[in-house]
Length: 118
Image (tube, rainbow, N blue to C red; front, side, top):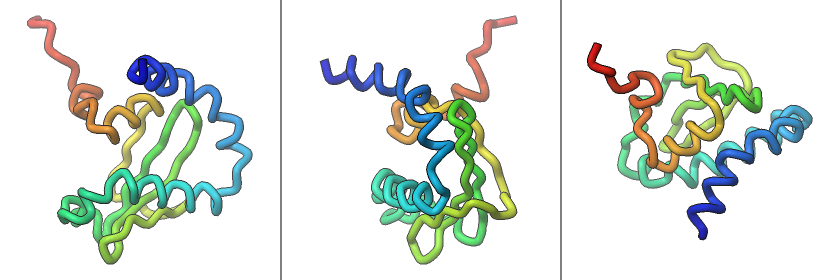
């Protein structure tokens, strides 16, 4: 039952979020994003798995809710900014990003679909 509810939220959530996201000032978005990302990636930060982002900026664009931000790592902490010179960009719909963040989907499957054998 919880899986079914979670699935519905993942698929319906973006359409419910698009207007509030557009109306929310970036300063508030930044606070929320930094808290959520720090919580979601706390183990990866602790294990040093995100060290590759130190001194580099990652641009993330959530297409279906038109949310874009830049993130980097400073002193083992994720930092979110409204503007930066991105070293790499990542763009996807919210449901795909949620599945990747929850480690339920391999990002490669979004960009390199399985071969049909042709």
